[in-house]
Image (cartoon, rainbow, N blue to C red; front, side, top):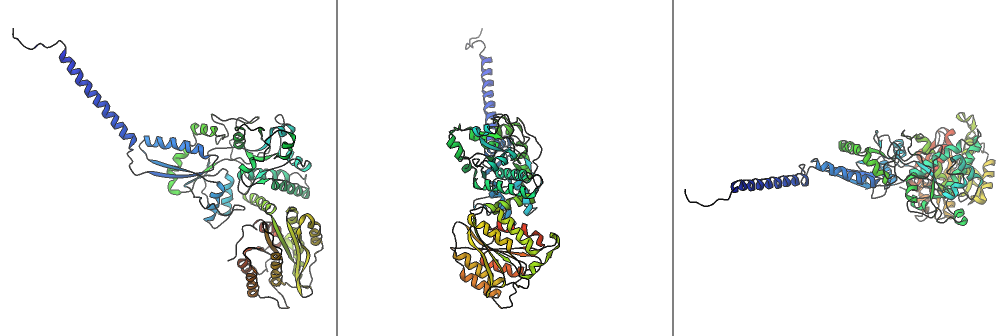
Length: 582
């Protein structure tokens, strides 16, 4: 037997196992390194898709959370996507989009200087898309998809809502109108409807109900609607946060009696308000008819981003996103709430999924025009043409004379102006007051005391049968009169309604002389808006535009005199937006 080294039993198998283990560790480590490289360094390299989304602040938290998850998932699938969610006021984005077509929306004006037009825009309401398409059909592409919803309801402190019969009784806008008309303790509020969708939705619904309240009596319906608009105007707030501060902070009778009683707000706003555990909770009144809801339409503005925008949209239509909406008090696009949704008392569990029934664009614009006419503080001199041609009949107005349709428009406008306005009335033709072509009927003064005199003057105006049109001398005199009593904090303006070009046989100013004297009289610290309204098809429109371009203001023409009422309201509503001097 040979001698040799002793080898323990099984040592050969142990070495093999040890070697296999080492290989296995290397394999695991290599796999882990491969996985780390794969998920930490996506294969797409620097080819990164980018998309910007503009959304209102009440929705953006849910979009930011969902897009973060979506981007991470895309990254895990080897795709690089960068999503930027911008908190954008819908009014500012709408203003920027309208500005691309050199247009403005009533009451909106210019966009915030920091506003960006995103690749994808989620407004809070389809009303914005409708208003934009009304000024330029190409401004917003078709094919928007709703991604969330919040009904617009009436918010009312619970102790006051109980006096209306809540929660057992359903409360309607008609009930609210009746209360506003009979109970001065009811204080109605609204967020500026020209810039806020909940305000606009509430205003549209209230105006519709008011218009139907006259029982066939058009005059009564108009008075009811005007009264409602004035009540809303008295309690208006520029932004929603200011409006919410007006609700009562205590339940004692004095506090309840001096605080805001009711305002149209989104369901989400009430949920979030009550979530702060206020001393007085707000009831959400789901009315009939219902106001147009916030439906958050998703629309792609950048054509080259359609592919990625469509893919993201699919993620915003999932149950996961619905649950993120529920956590911030919003419903899914179909009206059903997601997980975490805290429903207000007496709220329906789910709402109809049908697209919101929006009034036509002309109705919306007409109502906002009236709103502007009522709410913008003013000091105005109304100057009416009483030349002989104002006796001509208007076939489209049942052969009423031009003077009659003009005076009717003026009376209706006067009915919209509240007592905070200051108004004066002149008439003009030729040689009305000695050598003057104009005559003062009512000096400019507060309507709280001037209204009867203004109505009386309008009722007594009669055209001068053989009178001509001393327009230019009248315009200069009116400008100087308004400027001499200028009041800061108001829109100081002149509105001239005429059916003819300047025609003064006695001579008078030429157009060049008028413009030169107006410019010489201008004072940047005392801006005067000049509004010239032409009635019929024989006005000197080109010369009128020369005047308003030179001193600031606007020229409006109604070729059909029967339309003078609409033109009058449009001109009044645009006082704060029409052109500055060139």
